[in-house]
Image (cartoon, rainbow, N blue to C red; front, side):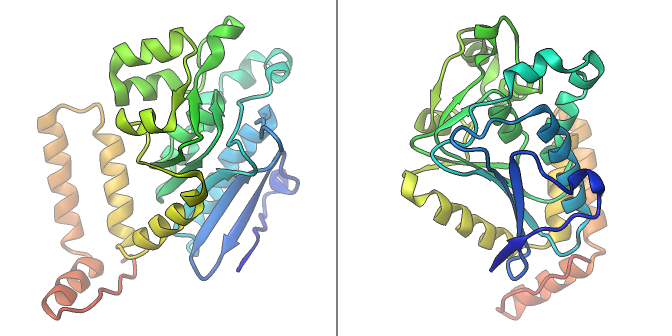
Length: 268
């Protein structure tokens, strides 16, 4: 049973265009864009989304976070007028705010259907998993406004698909169907529209079976070594492996393996 999540930070007393729900039995938090029909993300919402992810990261009762949108579309992007009204200092923080899912130590899943444009695409790229429906259309349309992506979109995308495809997407404001996004490695999985929620639910259940300590370690390791030399990445991997060998979860995992039973991880 899901219920509305209550934040202690007064800046989150009234969320702008989205809501947060918690499923205590699943140890799952849902961040749901809720400004139908296009779920436009305001400048204020970007600030609040950062604070929300930071708060959920600190909550020991939350293991998995799912980012989704109500209705037919995840998000058509940002509030265009808001860009003209925001100060240069405020605009300079956009990429940091949108990168909150990547900084979060816990697994973050984006559930994308319909329009997933601009900042909607950028914040999805900052998530660990992108489950898309066949109706999903990814795009960075900023060229049509005489602009470029400003919240990490082109940079993250280039890491995934390379410079040639990124130029094709960014410089032509090209829309990428969900199936193509999967084929190119942008999406983790592409399913029929009616199966999106069930697929996300199944992934949440799967992730909950693993050690939260090992999950946090794996996410940070992969994020930290993305730009590292191979030798450096291997060295850091080895150090993290050695650290986890001392954990209660590793001991439990080994014992459960030999006893042919399901492991019960505690995150220690």
